[in-house]
Amino acid sequence: MGYFLFIVVGVFGCLMVLNMGFTIWSRIAEMRYLSALAHRLEIEMVPAHQDDGAFDRSAAEGTSDVLFDITRGVDLLAGDWRGQRLHFIRYDLNSTNFSTPRVELAVRARVQPFTFSLRRKTIRWKLLELVGAREVRVDDPEFDRRWHVHTSNPGLFLALMLPELRAKIDRAADAGAVGEYRLNHGWMRYIEQGRFDSPKRVTRYEGLVEVMWELAMAVEMAAKNNVAS
Image: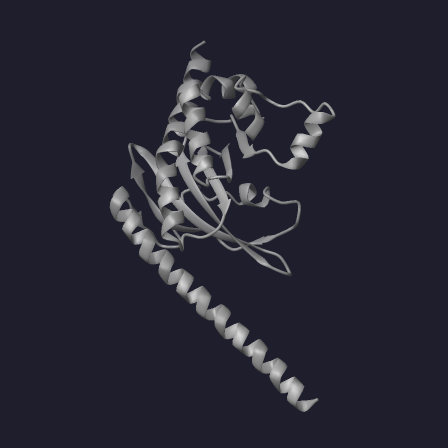
């Protein structure tokens, strides 16, 4: 019995050491890849305490029905890109049993109170459609098949979601960007599970910057046209 307990404690200790080593390696990798990304985008790595509203706690909490404790959002990169404020943010959703890392790209979109959420359709949504559930559609069969839309202003959403923009969102999804696009509190956000510790993933996020910028511009333009009319 003593030997068995010794083996269990040893295995548990090794697993803890491996987990700590992976966490340290992940953080070092994040900083290295993000430093290169900051240089390419000509934006800056920023202190963890810096915050101008890009991290939205309610948006993070809204991703699950489970009550999570959210580790403070850490602004890893921030700067102005083509005249719009851009942030790369990391945070963790923590429950009693596990922690889920999430990343967020946020681009300033100067429009309120218009909101929307765009997510890939799950089996649940497809089943709801079969029993008559209604949702916003853009009259693009392929896009409507793949995406679920929730918005405070369907007319405004349809005005901004032009074919060229829909095609770019679909291409980004084909490349692996299957998170949620969310507009709220004056920020256009892309949120997904993961970290910035993979060069392939960071390259994909970099490719999303232009899509997010175009979404923010389309939101502002549609809102201005809606007011003018």
